Length: 304
Ligand SMILES: Nc1ncnc2c1ncn2[C@@H]1O[C@H](COP(=O)(O)OP(=O)(O)OP(=O)(O)O)[C@@H](O)[C@H]1O
Image 1 (cartoon, rainbow, N blue to C red):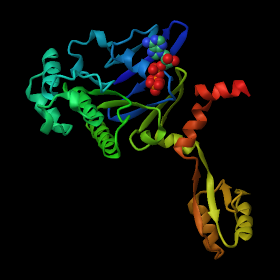
Image 2 (cartoon, rainbow, N blue to C red; image 1 turned 135 degrees about the vertical axis):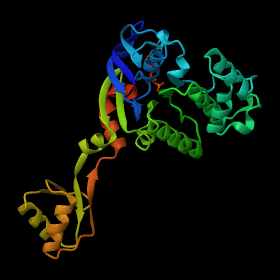
Image 3 (tube, helix red, strand yellow; image 1 turned 180 degrees about the horizontal axis):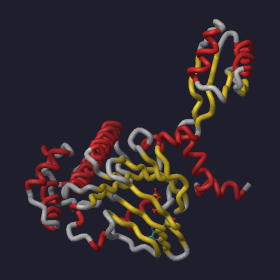
Image 4 (cartoon, rainbow, N blue to C red; image 1 turned 30 degrees about the vertical axis):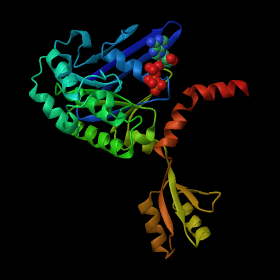
């Protein structure tokens, strides 16, 4: 369980995190989303004891990182996958980490197997591709079999296979009952991976919502197309719907769901060529929520 409570972190005049509160529950993947500079990495660094809060707290299982006796067994983290000793082999890197946390070396072979690096365990990490380094970083995060995982932009720079692998791994780790917090600045990545979303902008909380709730919130009626559109429009309006004609000729109907519209059309023998919920994509919802918090847009507005 992760709890961020009224967390504020200032760097001189910059407020990187501004009274931010949210929780990450066991058994869920929570996507931590926000434009560049929104304060995601800073929040994660405070959680992992790498930066101290100006005020408030970021706790794992009710404790600050510095209070944990064997931190790798409570929280696994991937912050910067390239931060490995280039001269060390994958096996030695993990064995060194395991030793410093009182973890048996048998576990090293297990996690190397789990991330698909068993075959290159004795190769130096300096020669690894970014994808392999990401896998090694994830192996390190899993070493202590922690109940909480914190990953900062784990799919950055990965090819589609690597992206799919991470997505499936995160889902599997949550299904085992772990609390998984994963940051990204792309909604497209998160909508396929996360159950829950914490969206931030300029250090502040913008939304704390399930993916389903967010989709429902940006639902915009039902799109309907029919060769007898005018007649159908009248029928739907008579049933209490509000009906607008879209620029492309389709109807945008609100106040009736897809099933109801289908039944009304069928009862009058009106053919339907298309009938589907007209939701904004989650990407559009995200842009709408964070638009004002993206620095370059603010700068553009100031110029015009
Ligand atoms: N060590 C530091 N010293 C000074 N300012 C910092 C420091 N770390 C972060 N900041 C500033 O705090 C703000 C939040 O940065 P942070 O890296 O946490 O955002 P982010 O959401 O992780 O963005 P990104 O996706 O670009 O990594 C930014 O304005 C950044 O410049």
